[in-house]
Image (tube, rainbow, N blue to C red; front, top):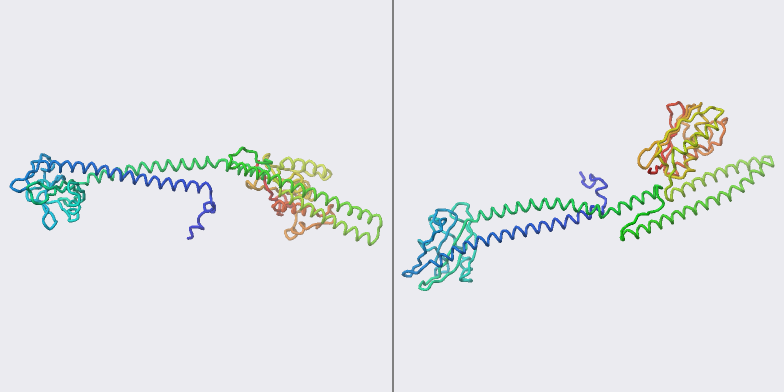
Length: 469
């Protein structure tokens, strides 16, 4: 399984907050590890220094109490009870340096605690002692007990009246100190783990608080896009203030561009419709075959002009800042108007929409979309029309328009969306209603679907952009 594909896209997408958190956690973890290791080493070194100080005291007592009798070294009678008890973990030994540079224990000059054993004295240690006579040298060795590790402190000494140098050695079981170091490291690790958890929480909070203006700016920009605000108005930190100014300038530029487009569209509509109206009037005043041809073509021109101007206006509106239209308010107005228009037919329009539902677009466009759909339903119904509007999700809303009329066969539904197509020539109208609804819905990146209504007639289902409440 490809792990990269399995991860959600949101986790693979670069995140400023995640980058800051991981960066802070990285250096914090590295710093904590370094500090923990340094503390453990310092504790170990401090423990060894105390350990060596105790061994050095034992050697000092040995050297101070030793004498030369008949050319032989005589050790003092020490009273350290641990050195008198067999395998107690505290040992001492006096060795003599041989002519070949090696060393061996002097018989009888070892502590009772060694119990017929002896402390190892490697040749490299003898060389080190010879290089620094009188200075102690510490090293680790095997103790007399199986698995016992002892720390040995040795010192090179010469006595007047004794021909060969003497090495005094003191040793002690280092397992207790190793155990103390391990306990200290475990305690330190636990403490630093808790500190790391606290740091993680503090870093996450710090990043969230630090990036709060960025999240607020995102919400304000979304409000501008959805039509809830005209510009970004918040007071932002110095680092973000230039960005907010540029965003406001961009919004203003887009608004001016859209306004110019609307002006050009209006001017074009006026410039085209006036000559077309003159041509139609002249053709009506001069009946004949030519006049009929001119009338038909002029009407087609007028429809094409209306079609393209409508699409241009809708496209211009979708490019500008979002505008909000109250759905329930428009449906109520349309229902009352159409019931008066179809009063002779006795049409009743039952509509329902939440009070906090808004269309993301201009009121005129929504009135044209809903009005043409409801007018078509009123034209074909037997007496009842039902209109429902509801949110689909945060970005879309659903508008359904149904009637109790004869309905429309599935194989002919695509035809009614064509411009000027009328399936029943006896019915009034130009055949443009549902075509206009479909064009405007698609201009707003929505859709129109035709289906069967439970009431028996046709059901229009419109998906349109929704503005936040």
